[in-house]
Image (cartoon, rainbow, N blue to C red; front, top):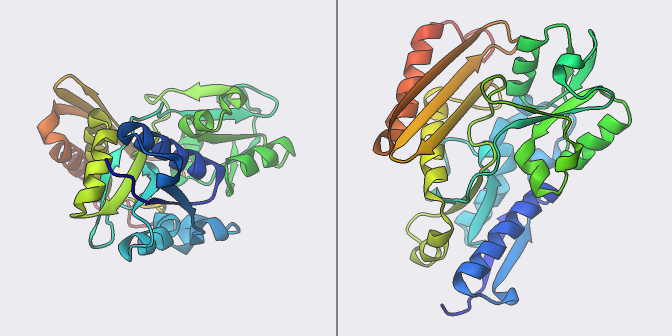
Length: 309
């Protein structure tokens, strides 16, 4: 393939850069491109700049993608690399998620300052998390714990933990592994007990619809099983109108020609939760997620979201 300049847009956090570098390496390996053929363009987003308020108060997930997607639409970059769990279910006109790299471990990691497990935290301990899903799950299993909003990139949160601002925090295990920080984990939470966010652990590559050159470059990078699982999870999320204001968990697994799915919705205080499990054929991945959401909505009742969304 002829060497051509390819620009990858990304946020500037260490984790975002690690994900962009992984995408760059895979592109270069798949197409035998030289070092100067693929450029990483670092962009600042509102989500990175606003650190003093919860995302739910200032616009939700889209704050991490808006500026990057503007650059993608007007041609300043050719692809954008994101954490899948940060992606809104409705994308700007003309853009789509063209590929997903093979998913890393989707579990949440507990990192305790003086104890190793969530169950070992003393009554009244303080846990920091910026995720409404994690906050709700923590309150569900440990209602005696104080949960505080905890913004910042991975390194910032670990520093705040070390300084004693909180007794523990939660981070995505996949991100810690990509940063070479798996050693800081003191407990891994199994999905059956502490289910992850939809898309957690997967890197999404966004591009312009109908760009044949980019489609050809991204084709070899797309991991089929991850892509199918994310179709299911994002369909579930879309039907629930999921955002940073809704505690929603979901995980799909592909095995052979079948896909299994589990999902959960919670109230922010963790006092009410509804779960569902289902399975189906790979061709029905989107319908499986959508149907699971419909069944959960019926189970929870029309008033479930009304008091807090």
